[in-house]
Amino acid sequence: MQSEEISPEDKAKAFHDVIVNIKKNSIEKLAAESGSSMESLDKLLKAKRTLQVLETKKYTI
Image 1 (cartoon, rainbow, N blue to C red):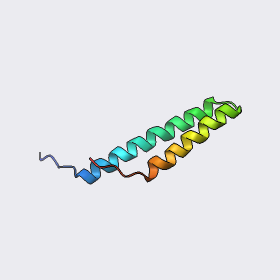
Image 2: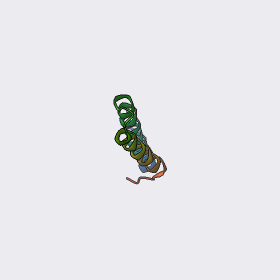
Image 3: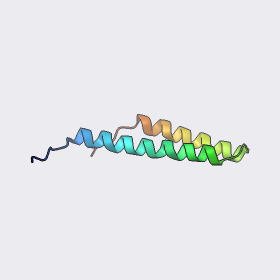
């Protein structure tokens, strides 16, 4: 059985996908658990802005 080499680009894409999915799950949990207070909404908005940055960021490995 031959082991297939994974390209650096594929590794970087996989890493990016994992980071984005973790942040999305975190936001979903925060939204489900938070109330409607201004503090909770502020945390949620900050998390969503962070996700937007992460989605556009390019990683290299």
